[in-house]
Every structure is written in structure tokens, then in C-alpha cells.
Length: 196
Image (cartoon, rainbow, N blue to C red):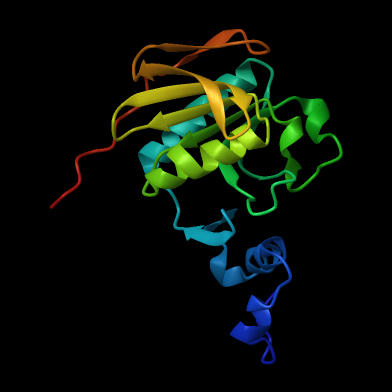
């Protein structure tokens, strides 16, 4: 979809819901290289992630697929909490959950989401974590290459997860049922120091 001469910013901003605006923006060819999400009622656009970020997502994707799971990078998610439609860095589910090709994917079909921290720490540590818990996604794996840490959140309870298990890069991260295997983090790399 391209912008027509009669499409004005005012017309676009009148979209009844953030989801409609999100659908519109996803169809604009000039925005193809951006990750576009609805976070806490606001449209968030980010440039492509850095190689170390993408490498971590690729390593996790390969491990999940090897264990028989469906691993979906940047899959749009939706629940009855309408002010959000995040695209998790990685969404993990079973084949049956995606058989009818839903997009966005309902959160109640998701077993695990992964976020790799990039420039917007607040979104990954607070806003998305809250939405994932409120949407009852059983497991949230938060990988922070700035700190070389991994946090596995489980037992969603309204606005948060009741349990968090901290890990460091290099060691195994055991995943509970229904996974019952450990994620290998030995090839995760920290982000290089930021230049002044």
C-alpha cells in the first residue's frame, strides 16, 4: 500500500484503534526495514537490530527448532489488552498453535517469548514484561547483552511474574515444562562498549 494524495496525517491519525494504524504502517513500502509495534498505546518504530542481537535470536531459534518447537522471530502478538501488539524478538509455540496461520498470533497460543535488550531497555524490562504477564504467557526469557545476563520469568500473575531466575552468559539456562531442556548460552556475545 502506498500513500495516496488524499491521505493526510490527520486522516491516518484518525484510525479508530492503534491496531488499524499499525496495519496501515506495515503496508507502507518505505517502512519495510523497520520493526513496528504497538506498545502501551503508542506506535514504536525501530531500525534493524545489530548483528550481536540478531545472532542471539538466531542461536535461540536454532535450539528451539532442534528441540521440536516452532520458533517465530518478530511475530506479532495480541491479547485482550488492546493497547499492545508487540513483536517479540522470538516467539516459541507448538505447530498446532499456528496451523491456521493467525496473524497477529493470540498470546494464549504462546509458550515462551524472548526479548534481547537493545536500545529501549524500559520496553523490554517493564512494559513488555508486564504485557506478557497480563496476557498469561507462561515464560519470558529476557537476554541483556549489555550486562551479559539472562532472566527467566515464570508463573505469570496479573501485572508481573511471580518467579524470576537469573543467569549469566556462558552457562546453561534450564527451561521448565513443557520444554525440559537447557538453553546453551555459551555462544552469546556481549555488546561492545559504546563509543563516547
